[in-house]
Length: 330
Image (cartoon, rainbow, N blue to C red; front, side, top):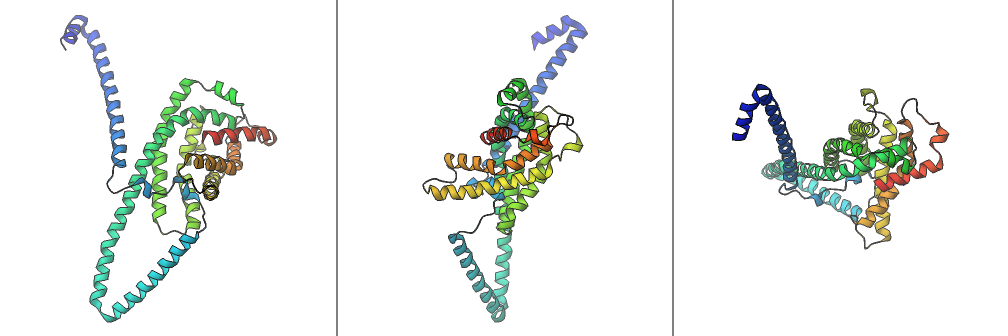
C-alpha cells in the first residue's frame, strides 16, 4: 500500500492511471476466479442433494431404446395389473359401503401426490448435477478430438493431415466453446431423460419421443460447436443444418447401443452394464449402426463452394476412416 502511494506521487497523473488500470484488471481476474468457484460449488451441491441417488436414474442413452419386456418385467406388469384390479374392487365396495372410508382414501391419495412430485424433482435435479460433472470431463476430451474428427468427417482429410491442421492454440480456444455448451447440453439431456423416465409413457414410444425432443432442442448447440471447431462463421441460418440426419442418427444410436447391451450381457452373464468392456463394445457397435446417418449429416455440412461430389464423398475408404475414428473418439 505504501509502495503504491509513493509510486502515485512520483509518476503523477499518467502513472496513476496506468496503476489504476492494472488494479482493475487484477480485480476482473479475481471476479472470474470467484465465478468459477461458485459454479463448481453449485455442481457439488447438486451432487450432494439428500435422498437423491445417481443409481436411481436410468442410463443416459437408454432413453432412446425401444426394448421388449423380459419375462420378469412381464410378470411384474401382470402382478401390478392384478393388484390394480383388486384395488378397484375394494374402492368400489368401500364407496358403496361407507363414504367415510372413501374420504380417508382420498386424503391418502392427496398426501401421496406431493411425495411423488418431490421424488421426480429430486431425480431431475440429481441428474442435472451428474450431467454437469460429466460435462467438464467430456469438454476437455472434445476440445482435442472434435476438431480432428470433424475434419476427417466433412473435409475427408486423412488422419495425419487433420492432426497437423489443428494447432494446440486452436484446441485451447475451442475448449471455451465445449465447456460453455456442455454445461447447457449435458444437464439438459439428463433432466429430459429423468423426467421422461418418470412419466407414464409407453416404453416403445418413449425413446423416440425423448430423442426427437432432445435433438431438436440441442441441435443449435451441436451445430454451433461444429462450426467453431471448423473455424467457420456462425449464422442464424445454419443453426439447424442437417436436422433430419442428426435426429435419426441419435435415435438409431441409442436403440443400437441398448440392444447391443442386452445381447452382450446375455453372452457374458458375469459382466455388468457399467463394466468398461461392455461400454467399449456397445459404443463401437452403436456408432457403426448409426454411421450411415452420421455420414449423411457430414455430407450436408460441407462448406458452400467446397463440396465434394456424392461419389467422392462416400468412397468406402473415407467411410471406414471417419466411422472408425468417430467410434474411437466416442
